[in-house]
Image (tube, rainbow, N blue to C red; front, side, top):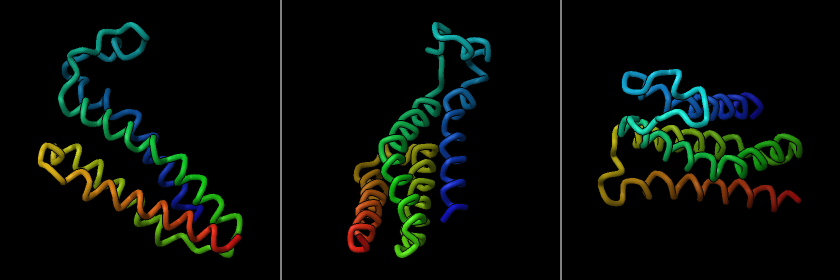
Amino acid sequence: MIDLIIYVGMFYILHLFFKMSFSLHKVPFVKWTYTYGDTSNSTALSSRMVLASDNLRQSLPVFFVFAVLSEVTEGVDNLMLAQTWFGLRVAYLLGAAFDLYRFKMVRPVIWLPSIIVLVCMGYNLYLYS
């Protein structure tokens, strides 16, 4: 579980660079380096990456709490659920990258199971306590 927590942390750090990375050909790097830099020319892909990052940040704290508690309690085996959550988050990112969310009902098919997995992780912890 500890390895997975580290992988998820690195995945989040990677998310932080997506907006800038996919717009460097339109917005000079120096514009990203200060608060009032004009980044209005960023690409549509960068905008989608920002939305995917925002979505990740909404569930990431809950995941980390449940994953760490699962590791600390040692009696709760949430590893498979945590791996499933991480896989769904990677799928969510790919869906945003390939602009799949322009189609109706694609986003909920990926996003909702990730929330259900978090609920299952919490339920497992509740049963253990």
